[in-house]
Image 1 (cartoon, rainbow, N blue to C red):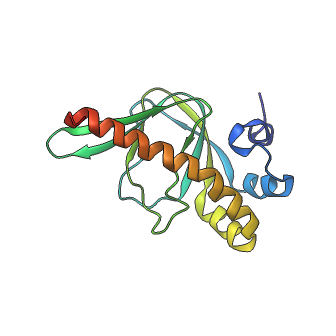
Image 2: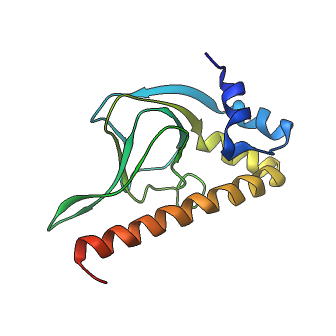
Amino acid sequence: MQTLKQYLEEHPFFKGIKPHHLENILGCATSVQFDAGQYILREGEEANNFYIIILGKVTLEIFTPDRGPINIQTIGEGEVLGWSWLIPPYHWHYDARAIELTRAIALDGKCLRNKCEEDHDLGYELLKRFTHIITSRLEATRLQLLDVYGVH
C-alpha cells in the first residue's frame, strides 16, 4: 500500500512539480471513500476540495428539467475530479456521483488556496495543471450536449 506522498509523487498530474510544492500539497491531503450512489459534488454548492481517484468510477452529470440528469463524463482510477475550488466564486458547476465504491485522495481547496496566496509559484503550477482538466470537461460537455440534443 502506497502512502499519500508516494501516490502523489508518482501521479501524472503532479509530474515534475517541485518537492517543496508537493510537501505543501500533502499538508492539505486526506484519504476518503464514497459508496456507490453517493454524491461527491452537487452543482451550486461551495467547492472546497478536489479529488484524485485511486479506485472506482464517478459520473459527472448536469441536470436538465426536461431530461433529468445527463451524464457528461465518467472518470476513474488516476483521474482528477473537481476544479471549481480554484476559480472564484468557488461553486461546483455539475454533480459528481460515485457509481461504484470509490477511494480517493481529497485535497482541501481552502488549504491550497491559502498556500497559493503565500506561494504564487505553487498557484501558477496548479492553475497550469487544472487548465487541461477544465478544457477536457468543457469539451466532454459540448460533445454530450450535441449528442443529447441531436445537433450536428
